Length: 310
Image (cartoon, rainbow, N blue to C red; front, top):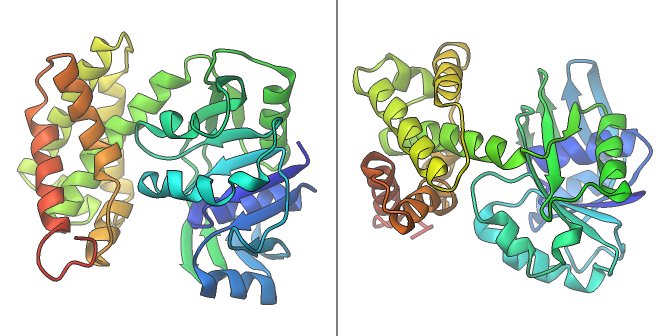
């Protein structure tokens, strides 16, 4: 697993690309943001973290610029761009290339399945913090974890090598056969925090300090747990709720990515988060009225006049 492609050089993609490069892996960042690519190629990727500031020399380019046949592709694009991004690098994917998604939301595996067999697909979650400060500059402070596993339920030597590579890059990564539970728990958290901030324009702390915000957040978590249970996935709703309560206080000024997208007039990931939960709820006839209502409201905001995402 020496040659690694990072598809989507946003905050998370840059963090992973920088650390894997520092660990000695041959990494290429692929993105469509030309100013960002040019900054990285000209002066390196600036990584500001708890152990100081580093400049990492790393290849970056559009899909047309990169001529690397990777052993592993880690997908960090927004879910709505996944298929287009993978199609753009299809010519670089070999029969032995593994695909790993650490994206938010549901439905990512189904998209990746159009580009590789199930035996070469891995999915998972991560909660490492990362912020893109500008072209060629990423900041990450604090700890986190990564949980991954093979989509086919297998644990091969190659999959172990992927986990080892992430550990060697300084990440806390484990192979977790119950990773689907972790994915649903993160979806529940994001469905509450992202949609509520996107609709209200409030920061995380402002939602938490309001009368209705915590009530709605807890209901979304409860609904998501009910939907997951219909798929025989048991998530810990109480633990998720406690995490949300903690974030209300400790990350009070944070603006989640969905709110940032709304403020910038960009399309959000609402369809793969609240929308995906609501779709599964309808299939299994499980009520999820608050989760679905927030999805409709974000859709309306995305499509209001003057919003470029609509």
